[in-house]
Image: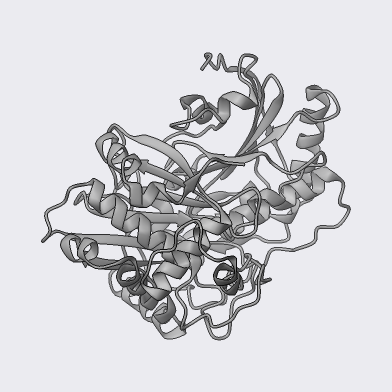
Length: 465
């Protein structure tokens, strides 16, 4: 791996090309806990455009300015009123735009086997920046990095302002406008008359909150790719309590194809057979990961393990929120099991625990979660304080590979240093689609070795196509 030799070429500020009609947006019960989380850092790797890099920079600046006019909160700042309520002042402030060159890095280097190379972290700015900093820092930034044979476009956004759904909506719109769209296909909804709107106040110490996890622990990070076939075999095993081999009859796999994979806007990639009775593909994959990481950690059999999953609440409410409601509309679902029991039972046992919790998270559960937070306002519990937790973030349903800026779909999706700790997992769609999944797995070094040596887990892993 050559040195990235990243050089900052320029840094400027981008303003919306139109004044905002929105004055302020109050942070919700789902937004406020994210103030102790670091800015989201995610981006896409692309081949070089069929024009010069300098022309690309000019084009990106122009399209970003237009995009911000459709997403005025991102060009604002956070403010706290005398009562302690936090708002987004949509005051047409700026966001940062950075141009970086890494003349010794190639696309091949990013795909090098093994751990994610450290140079990827240099594709992002605002390292270790808490979302509370949006009181005095821009709420978003974009960094474009030129490689030998490609470009990386990194998007960095305050996590108290967007969840993953809104983040990728903004990123997709940025790409859409860069590609030449005169009208955006999906407009954000800024309504704040929702169940998440509350008068409850979370009090912060002077200077704001601190990060809730250790940021200096040694970690390894890998991308594990799961093909559609591997996912279907996991799903069969979870639902039927038996293990499929790679030679399983294709008819059996065919019967499982109509899975409840849904994109963020509710459109299905396959027909939904029975979304309550059947353990889903993703729940099956999560259960296998839970088992294998628990085994690799060599926990005492009496130790309670936790699998924490963030879920989108937009479609769980009655009436539903708009699919493109802008902001955070997520809640965390923790599932617990004794390490010994999780490992002694088969895959279907753990998968069923996850499945039941997800299915049970309906309108009533969401509203109870809001009421519970209002009684005891608190920050989002990122981290792994007991050494036995896994936190699943992001989603294979997010349209990450829709970020076509005009010369083709991304080659890969990668993330920065933000919000990473032992047991943090992020799920991305596989580039080939069709229900394939990439898991970005962050673990303590010894745990990662154990996972890599776990034949039960690795039999489902394949090379990224």
